[in-house]
Amino acid sequence: MGRASAGLRWLGPIGAAVVAGLLLRDFGPEKAAIGALFAFTVGLWMSEVLPVAIASLLSTCLLILTGRAGEEAAFAAYGDPIVPLFIGSFILAKAMEQTGLSDRFAYRILQLRWTSSSPQALLLALGLVPCVLSLLVSNTATTAMMLPIGLSVLSAIGQRTQQSPFAYGTMLMLTWGSSVAVGLPVGTPPNLIGLGMIEKATSTRIGFGQWMAFAMPITALSLLVCWGLLLLLYGKANRQITPAGLAEARELARAGLQRAGAWTPSERVVIAAFGVALVGWALPDLAEMVLSKEHAWTTLLKTRLPASVPAVLASVVLFAVPCRDRESGRAIDWREASQIDWGTILLFAAGIALGKALFASGLAKDLGTLAAEASGARDVWAITALCIAASIVLSELASNTAAATTLVPVAIGLSEAANVSPIPAALGVALGASFGFMLPVSTAPNAIVYSSGLVPARQMLRAGILLDIVSFFVIFGTLRLVLPMIGLA
Image 1: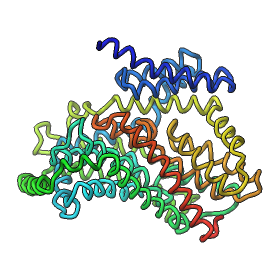
Image 2: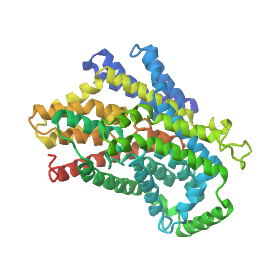
Image 3: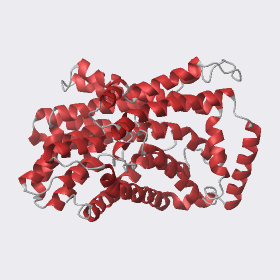
Image 4: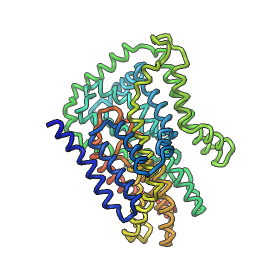
């Protein structure tokens, strides 16, 4: 029976590949093959018929075997700059866990009366904290930092199990809270891509205050939508967490803080390492805000201090600074550091390889153009709606940066062809690119929480589809209301 069941699970990925290949056959054999391979790989991830890491490596090998990419081009994705960013961030998160620092932070959160007054309030707090942090720090780094804290909170309230709906909601709230933080231009690369291309095409420079006027409401509304949606999906399970249980968790947190006592040397080193990372991540964008985009120091910092470098330097601090309270003499040793989730790193690298093939073949652009032609959109808001939807869908298949880079020019071109302002459509693409929530590879924060093992891919897909749909209306509605008021439509 087990073998038969395993065999049936292969039908999903194979069926997805066949359907995608048939639907795309008019685009030519190369594009149809890439679309089929992408569908097959997503099917493997969803069905979990193979371990995620093995399925990811297989997808890259199939790119080479089918002639859709050369060996160097395909496996170059495993050396993408986001890979060392993942490794450094994961090591920092592991150090938080090993030194007990994540428990200390979790206890602090649980001791706040409003956060532990109900499961609903606790869930909101676990989305609010990463959302605020992610306004200035990369969502990848924020989620990596918050994951061990979230896991410690779940342990304290007895919900750290693979069958806990509250754990599903908590993990998704961490990634969604980080991803919806588009309120500042520096929060995520698609924001800057959109601003740069708009200025180049229209000579209109959108200021910091103008951006916040429409993007901060989108961030706030989206966070509330995330919270409400997770309560709708998993709220019934919250009844398992009683007021008495939360009171007991508060008491456990108080006792835990007493046991922890004063900050240990290793905890201080981990905090210092995070300080190094946070400064390194924030400096280039702060320089652009304070000095200007063209200033020599801004250019130097953006060139010499990409996000991957502070992550690795911060992890080096963990190994370099002595800590007398640890047996190894360091905040973390290599045995502990090597236990990070390498499978998630391979998963995301494979997603990058597939995404590059999708864009290099021209299939991504063809699908966007086809959707535009089929819709017949001619006025500014119809084009904007179409571009937001296309951006959200495309960001499910590839990185948000790639989606924005591909679709912002398409949005501007469609608008100019219709003789309407391209600003709303281009902004819709830039914002929509950060709102792909369905798959572990849709965004780095999704991959990070997936590595916890507490949120199955099917749960992520189910909840992510709903959030994608609601996010479309949040982005479109806010732009439609605010942009005319501030003179950008």
